[in-house]
Length: 419
Image (tube, rainbow, N blue to C red; front, top):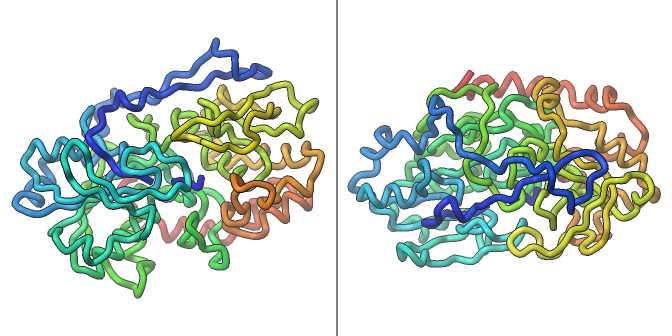
């Protein structure tokens, strides 16, 4: 979580040779006998991202000075969107990047500085450093903006915050924004408590559930339609829709969306496992299989599976429980079809591991490590932590998310671009 944003430079997909995850109960991290396949490009050409449909937006860019909000997920087939448009004589004058930096290799939460693209000489402005929104000066030499970033459909994943800030700046300084929409890999369900306004933070800005069930284009429509931009501004947007897509379709991302979501398994487990960033348990940062394992040194003797977080540049330089053996759950072979069938966050793991943890006072204590986050801000409510501590059942916890969750689902329908 801390999750995070970047910009794209002319990097080829080979940069992202992704090391996948092994699996199986009671195996250690050294057992690589059952490695899963890495993120792979979609072979089903029935789905066409907005970026891939260049004929629909190139005429809008010709002869204009273009700013692009992009990162390593901004690709058309095997070429970055920036490179593709430069080859088509589009005048890209500036690049804007979210969390993780324009190269996508900055760790979660690390501030990113402005830079110059070494290949093209284009200025790269960081929206995860000194400021979150493009300034008037940033947009002064731009006629039109383009947003092309792959999201994963979760409230605390910060790319939708970047979208909001960009929309607000474009509205304030009278710039049109073209959104090249992409599928939501977690778009097949909506779940979790609605964000409490008292817990607004960099990992939760608007009253939506943890899993919001929207593409970036749909969320942009919600930001405009609900008056959620600052001063209730309205941004002039044009969305290039995904062709051949509906929310129930599976979508394997061709490029990892951030350094620690490096497999399809991690992307689909992320909505649940990121909640553990508010606990004293490792979610696998500091391994080559983050967000597919859970564990802590204190669980030794209670679980046979183990792994040891190490410092990994660009992924996790100082991970929680660094160089310590952690014991817990190996979810690298967890059957994702269960998630797609149930269409809910898996609270059982949270309840189980809290009950198994020997020192309950430490479990949610984010003061123990700078690598932990505030669980309440991740959950978006104060009640979830209190309910886990009180021993409430999963059914009781879910009941407390109503009527807010049902009201959100009803509101969401107004902004859907896809079935």
